[in-house]
Image 1 (cartoon, helix red, strand yellow):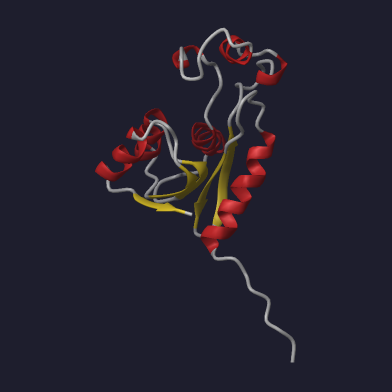
Image 2: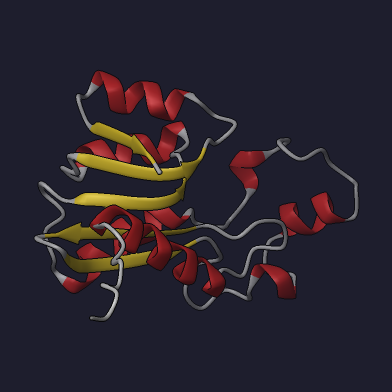
Length: 154
């Protein structure tokens, strides 16, 4: 008799895929990954980095990130001037670009959403959010809770 192989749960499986997606990030500081799932199928993926056609962050594409790396500004200073797109935002944008509805979907992310991402998640109709690590902007979680989005920490 052979031992039965243990399979990951769907949540474990998709969080592991988010870990792979984040490897495409071109952020100087930290890599994040996200994906949107409907009916156990991947609708889209996203990672943090510069918009299409803009020089990658790690190649000097984002002045703010470059200044942060040189120690000219603090970690959370001038966030509004960063041109990079968050992983969650990219996943929603890619779904729209491909014409895939996110309504009723689940988003898996390597981090909880910031407040800006949370607003997009809510308005994209995503009903469930699964993440691994807490973002410093905890308002995102509060917004998801207010909108009755199911939240799960993995």
